[in-house]
Length: 290
Length: 326
Image (cartoon, rainbow over all chains, first blue to last red; front, top):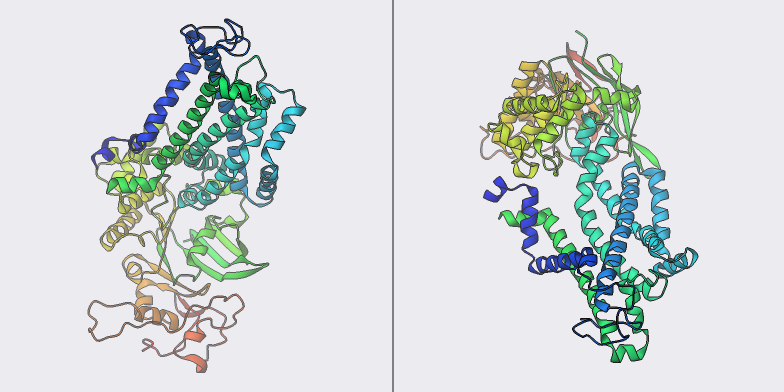
């Protein structure tokens, strides 16, 4: 009861989040990785795109993660690659979330023919084989960072749209929305100031998984050569080196660090997302009171 | 004196499959300024639907198919949404039964209380806040300043309903529609809320349309009562007359079904035999006939009109034994 008195809603959410030890650890790891990525120009010892040593050298004091096939410092490349991958993931998530929230709100609130049209379109987008669509799109547009952000952004939104629509449908029937109508509030106000804030929590949780997926998709596309183009490093195109069997077996420093970073990022983001969902769930609030 | 609200021959239908099924047929009653009118009936009798239709709040399946709802002489059914928004909240306010979700869970009480006043009355933030605190105090919340900063989930049910009432009053409406405002509350709180509503009426001179299925509440609160059964208004009278000299067989049965404090232990609680008909749009004549103790032989079986029993006392049924059904 005391915490209810002093703490606002956010304090409670924080508290519930912190009960997930794994998520807290993951958040810490993610923060460190994020900082390394953001500070890459400061902490990277070499230029990521220029050869600075002998090629395919195993880790050594000068190059702590070794050098790649043309002699670029692997550690520096991975730092910059994280920047690219996180940026692609973040932007793609932002685009798909904005599209999904907008369509979901309109669809759920106005209903009728608009709803049918939007939901049919959503189903259509969802029913395309995902990776194929991305590949074709990547082949038509010039592959590169901008196009991969746009492609992922425009392919990932249906889940968000459905989630938001479902939420709006149930919120629309609640009494506080009816009270607002009964109080003569304009529709715009109800939609954006009353309904939208109530969908923030589920959308935020969903966005974390889209974020993780986008990073994986970027890696997959870049691995296939359809994503971020060399010499710009990305976690996916660094892994491209692992295509040959000899590299895979004899030169693990060329692929293991990048692979590990991808796994760490995706696992951490997903764990944080899970904990966020629990933290936002009001049913846990009740358990907490007891 | 002109009626503040007058409902004439209101028909409401709900979409069912491909067609429409009528749920309110020919409902009509009026509310005078400063009057508390109670709309009573079983679940499914159409009382809430009638109330919702006044503010145009019927869900998408529902449709007003005929009649007039006159408020201050204007027919609300012909107004556009924008024009209706000028009436909603400002002149007619409404409070709902379900107190769990009547307040937006993500905002503080203060921000929700001040929103309406700032929008409708053009108050500045500071003034709206002070007015909000005053209203909360008026509805019996002691530490109003602190409650303003709280979120809905931190309040008890009774508190929430007080907040709802305070919000409804914030723009000084002329009519308050209260749809079973105390059903979800326990009896002590129920009593306090009812007292509050009554003293607010005395103070501000607003009218209250109280929807309830609780005869006790009716006796306590209402100046006049309208009884609804199967989508029709079946009887209308001032509270005293209705309770002491009910005319309609249904009203009589309803009153008999109220447990009394001084009943003998051995008395079995009376219940009306049968059920409210599920589909009643196509029924002709008396809709209560199938459950009526006077049954087949009743001369009023085919009556379709409200009849005048006494000045201000209307009923669809004037047959049956004089004093009570038993």
